[in-house]
Length: 144
Image (cartoon, rainbow, N blue to C red; front, side, top):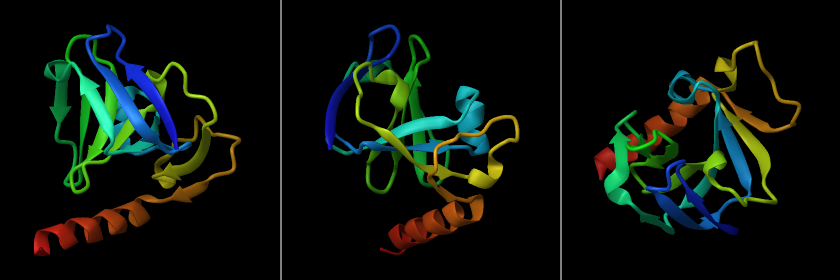
């Protein structure tokens, strides 16, 4: 696991992520591409995250299983947070010194448009696989 500090463009929000998985993911879903104009490159940071400037963060409830957050001052996309676990998936680009990471997984690979591709060999999950995974996670929490 890696440890690194991140911040938004204007510096109103700073984040210390203490358990970053060095294998990052890329999401090609319509929401991620619409949110940032490109696929979302994210490092999984778990829940051991310290955020300063919380009052500058705007949160959007983007799905049944997660929310997206950004800096209300400068608009920097900060993270995607899972509702069930509280785990953070932070934007790779907000970390200035994040060495030793590698692309490991591509989500919604069947929604990846034809105008870009990556040479990296990674695992991939389709929309149907992702929806089945989160449907079981959401139904488990609603039954308890």
